[in-house]
Amino acid sequence: MSSEISQLCLEALSPLAEHCSKCPDKDSPLSHATQHFLKLVFDMLLLQKHSIELTVAAGEAFYSLVCLHQVEYSELVQALLSSQRDAMVYQRLSEAFRQLQASSAPPSQDRKHKLAFLKSLEEFVANVGGLLCVK
Image 1: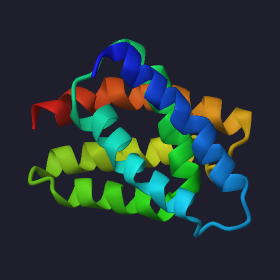
Image 2 (image 1 turned 135 degrees about the vertical axis):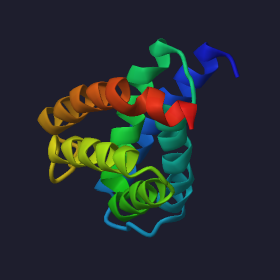
Image 3 (image 1 turned 90 degrees about the vertical axis):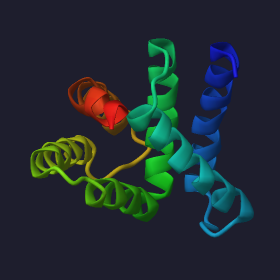
């Protein structure tokens, strides 16, 4: 997809996930549908090369999805960590994820938490993104 189309899609995910998190029915079909996007955005941000213009939109979508699917996010992190064979890489990733999660603990749709997470995500991608893309 073009960068512009990808950005529009990512920008649509944030309000969708925010809407789902405000709904009383957390098991709605819409909420379940957004779960798929968590892994896609996770992989895009952390494992694939992407244009810098997409980072902000992807980060906002990612945060909204993490707020909605906290258990699934933890499972993605654990799966990525457990796939690391190098102890040094594992330790570096583990610490980076710990700092990322601490920046907005507990995750909520609150603007203050979201901005803190986005700042930490930018640092996270700068520190370990290249390491993950090389693997």
